[in-house]
Image 1 (cartoon, rainbow, N blue to C red):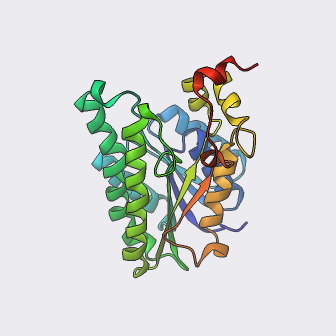
Image 2 (cartoon, rainbow, N blue to C red):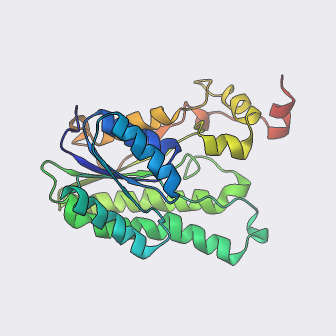
Length: 262
């Protein structure tokens, strides 16, 4: 029960990595504020948390909306009276070539993946700074940020590179107000969304080439997040933890060649 009496706000907690993070905090005794853009996903996460006999609250989750982010922070304070940890898992992904992408698509990604960082940090800081030991922020970035390159994910990868840089600067500014800021960079994680996007076959064939030859699990990301917000990580800030099974260290075959493999 490492996080007993802590209040944790998890964005993107309706499914995938966000849900795994929220559930693990609940298992470790935290009071969890579930933020999810899709109400039914958020309600399912709340149901699973309550099945663990843990306390939780559900708030809205459109990170592209300035007022929605204010409501998330206010919801946490109204429910539990404090905020100790913020884990920002929610993000949008825009697939496609830059020359074929609409201005509206790119603009929405910027609001979701970049402006949300500013809004969340600004609104959460006054509450996180009052945490009994250290307030914590963990941003969920991506191996696409600075370590690899996928042509159809340029806006997404660039937004995550911004996230990494923003977190480093924030760690310096927020250190003076009792808050630690870190980043987790997932690799290829076997979430439902990812498997629907890439199909069931390709991700497993890609992962076979990794030094750790399997897809990552949402629980792998949850373990990294909980470590970075634990007492054991009280001297770590401004860092990025890559959790990808070594994927970014190897040169992968072309997708069309991988699909030919049996």
